[in-house]
Length: 336
Length: 181
Image (tube, each protein chain N blue to C red):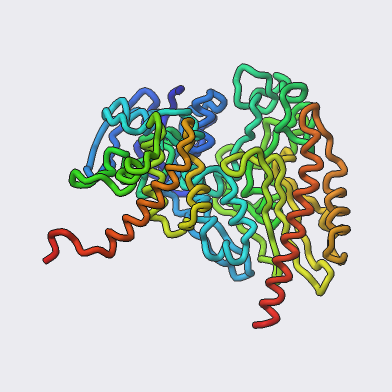
């Protein structure tokens, strides 16, 4: 593995001032060290941020839940407030990676994880995301696992996170600390579409550090469900996944949130599909129509056309299960 | 310029001092910034029980416990373990007596070639102490999915873990053999 300098940060504001070009923050390290070993990432210096005080999960006065950047995926998945009020997030986290990786990986690190596109991970291949202007070997290569939504001529890499799909559905805000101070970015604006510049993956400037992610207030009474479809039942990335969340107003859908994983170049929120659900009867015909709308712009590559019907089915099944759970929670509310 | 917030920057060509507790014993050693915990254990400290499989966090052969949690030592810089408790398979037995997981792996024939076994046992020992992980077979299988066994000994591994669970529960309630005042 190539060499780099190492230091440890003790203070958030100062840490954000410290980054030299090609320096990188390291928390769990599960993406970073993997990619350094592959020579895909080449940091000159690693700044260990694990001692920063960013490990709290707390309710804000406005009903939102603020999650510190360094809360591990394991701790977040099992946090009682997340399990009770954001079960879709807990499910998504536990559907991702392995026990060991979840024990290491952090909330902000998960947001920053890189694509699993095999051409990105291979320095001998052409990849505009890794090396701007080099081309894209995935577009006409072995692209079974690549994206059908949000791709461009330059890049068709899938965003790999499960956690981010749940956060996209819930709605969230990132808090960033940089040399110029603190700012906030809406979750759906953080990850970029590849366009002509796939190497610019997110809205994070040099020296900026994610310090917290604040979830929108939970929908009540609501049902939510994360359905992940993959080549094997555990420890595998999604071919297609859906995070669905909805509230019921009698037999009609009140609010609805739908986001997709495994098919898009970023965590894929589906606002038009959501609009097609609101105010409609919570039944199969509605779910099918919403799924068709969510995927109407999908463009298959040579080897991944199967992802479109697979994603369609994941949306329908997740909405059906979320509806069942919403009815259940409505009945419990009624009894209380 | 450096300031107080980022201390003891170690240049890539230098080594730095690392203090940790390894298998219950305090230890200080010199490591390079890019030294990976797995390699330090095996090559610098001569602890060959922890195995290198994929070296990318995919197979689980390198699993150790850090502050009681199962982690992939191949994706952990040694310098990041400052002040932490690291337990390898060499530290699983206590006072010359095998850990219940080690004993049950032997009794249940929970391995063939044995290469993945130390990692399997470190994950198993951690999950048996973790109340957040369900005790049913499906939960155990899911929690163990980060440990790959190319021989396919999964069925006996599951049996061994559940047998060790029974033994640990028995040990917790049984009167101690000695040392009780």
